[in-house]
Length: 364
Image 1 (cartoon, rainbow, N blue to C red):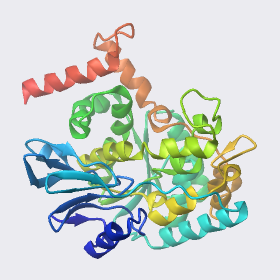
Image 2 (image 1 turned 180 degrees about the horizontal axis):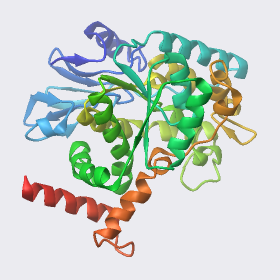
Image 3 (image 1 turned 180 degrees about the vertical axis):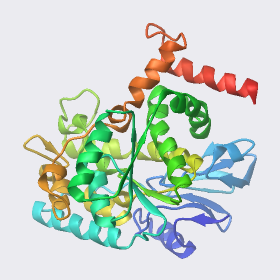
């Protein structure tokens, strides 16, 4: 195993030029005695500090695993930061939206459709992918969850082939220790997000799907978070501008992408993330504030571009975060309480998750 995501020549040139967005969908791996990982960390990479030649995308494959930071090169026992996220000046609004449209079209046109499906929630991100890629759609959630209802209505509007995977407590309970072990985390939020991805990936793999297209990165890049829209008045961000707050959340992507990649791979599929292609990221970073948030509408530029593929009622539809829209967060909390971990306990869901790990380890 050497380099994942692009060619050695592209990465060599990027190292020499320090070009953080060299036109790839991400990369990580070994390159002539060096370990490299792209600026957004779109592929996880771990190495054994006592044997740097031993590395993997999956930390469980190593006797001892140390994470290579996004944008870094590890060579001769030392890690150095080579790439940092660009911070371009805001472009003219109309030009920026046109650039985003062009970059999305080029990226979506270049995606191989074979063995591909879309993880579909009915929101603008996944609906744009669904309309442009024209492949089968899969959605996951508990019966009567927001995501299933939104996916069905949007799927009908698009005339798409939608498969609905309805969750139950037995499926969720069985998946908890497998997901926590796969992602190497036991905090409630990460496990809540990874659970539906893992279950959906397993189902898709069994249905013959090799790759799953997701809307990862759209909220971070295009101003989808309320805390970004409210900057600088929201205590959850430090920045004093919307663009600055957007940059803060974009910098959280490496940790999120590692979690999601590990969950999806544990389920047996490879993620495809069109919004995170370098050309789309570059266009997004150049958007002015009014193209991120305008008249209380978040992701304004993306929604405007999405109307090229979607009716307005889908392009401007709000949606809930995956763990809430699927009701996984609510039902995982319910499982924890049923197992005796009450809300008055500190991190009761985390304690429940850790207990399931111990239980499954004992019976392994």
